[in-house]
Image 1 (cartoon, rainbow, N blue to C red):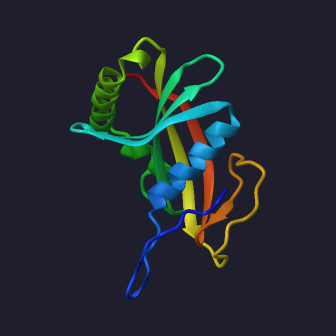
Image 2 (cartoon, helix red, strand yellow):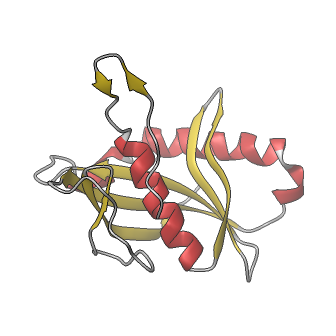
Length: 157
């Protein structure tokens, strides 16, 4: 994975957006699993969809919520942040997405959740990796990231 480039300010490098790094990691993993990434960070008045992916073989759509957390977090690696209110917000956002792209509206859809752990790393450069594996750390832009869990159909819309 090619590390993303970040803008720099007069005081030095801008810290990386850990959410975006985690989304990049999950997107790369999904592509390796045979999915196409249709949209990243799709926004509307209801909120944001982190990733919208389509399974190449079946044309199923997945609206993927990515949660990045450091070790010792209080919310079960981000899973507890997917409250009923958050689920409703994601569901409404997905509805508006499908209304915006009616050619996708008849496809089977699901809501997946990806839980990514992150911590600072002494290494600043990316590790060469043929593919992203579950629970295998990858260093990107000075952070060690690992896709800990990928929950298929984590909740219903």
